Length: 151
Image (tube, rainbow, N blue to C red; front, side, top):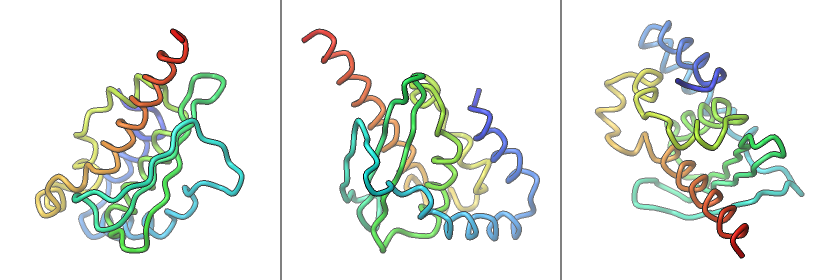
């Protein structure tokens, strides 16, 4: 149902107490810079914008690898909240190497399984923001692939 790296993260977080889960999310948020685009790195689709759902700009950078697997990088403005940074790390670690179909058909239920129902309730829909942006970028990349084939 989920790509193996994401499934592993889900299982890890589900095994933690609420306090350990929050500490783990803070630790993940601190590593978000590892998932930023590297200098000179090429992407098939890039979009940086600020939406009402987020406190600062979020850039989604996606590349389709020769084996048709997806590679994501994310650039975040300095005002992005800790939980968004943590989920960004989860998504980059969990979805890099996934297929287009795995990304597009990803159910959202895993987010509550990782961060807990309380944080989902407190943060409402904002916890789904980065996943929705990644899906949007993947759809745009997929559409451009088909439109370039018909040209």
